[in-house]
Image 1 (cartoon, helix red, strand yellow):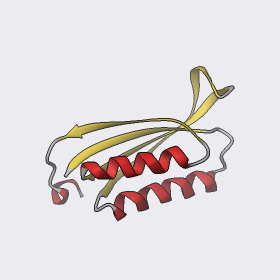
Image 2 (cartoon, helix red, strand yellow):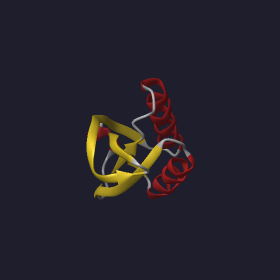
Image 3 (tube, rainbow, N blue to C red):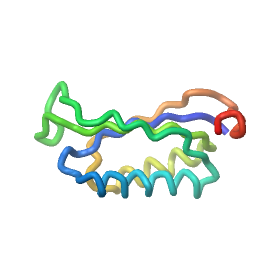
Length: 103
Protein backbone atom coordinates (compact mmCIF):
# COMPACT_ATOMS: atom_id res chain seq x y z
CA UNK A 1 0.00 0.00 0.00
CA UNK A 2 1.11 3.52 -0.79
CA UNK A 3 0.08 6.91 0.51
CA UNK A 4 -1.47 9.33 -1.99
CA UNK A 5 -2.81 12.87 -1.96
CA UNK A 6 -5.45 14.19 -4.34
CA UNK A 7 -6.18 17.91 -4.51
CA UNK A 8 -9.58 18.83 -5.95
CA UNK A 9 -10.78 22.20 -7.24
CA UNK A 10 -14.56 22.24 -6.99
CA UNK A 11 -17.04 24.64 -8.51
CA UNK A 12 -17.99 27.53 -6.22
CA UNK A 13 -21.60 27.00 -7.28
CA UNK A 14 -21.84 23.58 -5.57
CA UNK A 15 -23.87 23.61 -2.38
CA UNK A 16 -22.39 22.20 0.84
CA UNK A 17 -24.65 19.14 0.55
CA UNK A 18 -23.51 18.42 -3.01
CA UNK A 19 -19.85 18.82 -1.98
CA UNK A 20 -20.28 16.36 0.88
CA UNK A 21 -22.10 13.91 -1.41
CA UNK A 22 -19.21 14.04 -3.90
CA UNK A 23 -16.60 13.55 -1.20
CA UNK A 24 -18.60 10.70 0.29
CA UNK A 25 -18.70 9.01 -3.09
CA UNK A 26 -14.92 9.40 -3.47
CA UNK A 27 -14.35 7.97 0.01
CA UNK A 28 -16.55 5.01 -0.92
CA UNK A 29 -14.46 4.42 -4.06
CA UNK A 30 -11.24 4.36 -2.04
CA UNK A 31 -12.70 1.96 0.52
CA UNK A 32 -14.20 -0.27 -2.18
CA UNK A 33 -10.73 -0.59 -3.73
CA UNK A 34 -9.24 -1.81 -0.39
CA UNK A 35 -7.90 1.62 0.57
CA UNK A 36 -8.21 3.74 3.69
CA UNK A 37 -9.08 7.43 3.74
CA UNK A 38 -6.68 9.14 6.15
CA UNK A 39 -7.77 12.77 5.90
CA UNK A 40 -10.30 14.97 4.11
CA UNK A 41 -8.99 18.52 4.46
CA UNK A 42 -11.34 21.35 3.41
CA UNK A 43 -9.26 24.36 2.38
CA UNK A 44 -12.37 26.35 1.56
CA UNK A 45 -13.19 28.98 -1.02
CA UNK A 46 -10.14 30.67 -2.56
CA UNK A 47 -9.44 33.17 -5.30
CA UNK A 48 -7.88 31.66 -8.42
CA UNK A 49 -4.83 33.06 -10.21
CA UNK A 50 -6.62 32.81 -13.56
CA UNK A 51 -10.18 32.06 -14.67
CA UNK A 52 -11.17 28.40 -14.76
CA UNK A 53 -14.40 27.79 -16.70
CA UNK A 54 -15.11 31.53 -16.40
CA UNK A 55 -14.90 31.41 -12.60
CA UNK A 56 -12.43 33.40 -10.48
CA UNK A 57 -13.10 31.46 -7.25
CA UNK A 58 -13.04 27.78 -6.38
CA UNK A 59 -13.45 25.45 -3.40
CA UNK A 60 -10.37 23.36 -2.59
CA UNK A 61 -10.39 19.94 -0.90
CA UNK A 62 -7.37 17.74 -0.16
CA UNK A 63 -7.82 13.97 0.16
CA UNK A 64 -5.08 11.87 1.78
CA UNK A 65 -5.44 8.09 1.56
CA UNK A 66 -3.53 4.83 1.70
CA UNK A 67 -4.38 2.48 -1.15
CA UNK A 68 -2.97 0.21 -3.84
CA UNK A 69 -1.96 1.86 -7.12
CA UNK A 70 -5.03 0.59 -8.98
CA UNK A 71 -7.25 2.57 -6.62
CA UNK A 72 -5.85 5.86 -7.96
CA UNK A 73 -6.92 5.01 -11.50
CA UNK A 74 -10.45 4.16 -10.34
CA UNK A 75 -10.71 7.29 -8.18
CA UNK A 76 -9.52 9.54 -11.02
CA UNK A 77 -11.99 7.88 -13.40
CA UNK A 78 -14.80 8.74 -10.99
CA UNK A 79 -13.49 12.29 -10.59
CA UNK A 80 -13.45 12.82 -14.37
CA UNK A 81 -17.10 11.81 -14.80
CA UNK A 82 -18.38 13.77 -11.77
CA UNK A 83 -19.99 17.15 -12.33
CA UNK A 84 -18.73 20.21 -10.48
CA UNK A 85 -15.01 19.40 -10.43
CA UNK A 86 -12.85 21.87 -12.32
CA UNK A 87 -9.39 20.36 -11.80
CA UNK A 88 -7.57 17.71 -9.79
CA UNK A 89 -4.06 16.39 -9.24
CA UNK A 90 -2.86 13.22 -7.51
CA UNK A 91 0.63 12.70 -6.11
CA UNK A 92 2.28 9.76 -4.38
CA UNK A 93 3.46 10.75 -0.90
CA UNK A 94 5.21 7.61 0.44
CA UNK A 95 6.15 4.09 -0.64
CA UNK A 96 5.02 1.01 1.28
CA UNK A 97 2.94 2.42 4.14
CA UNK A 98 1.51 0.10 6.77
CA UNK A 99 -2.20 0.88 7.16
CA UNK A 100 -2.20 0.31 10.96
CA UNK A 101 0.50 2.97 11.44
CA UNK A 102 -1.52 5.61 9.57
CA UNK A 103 -4.93 4.97 11.09
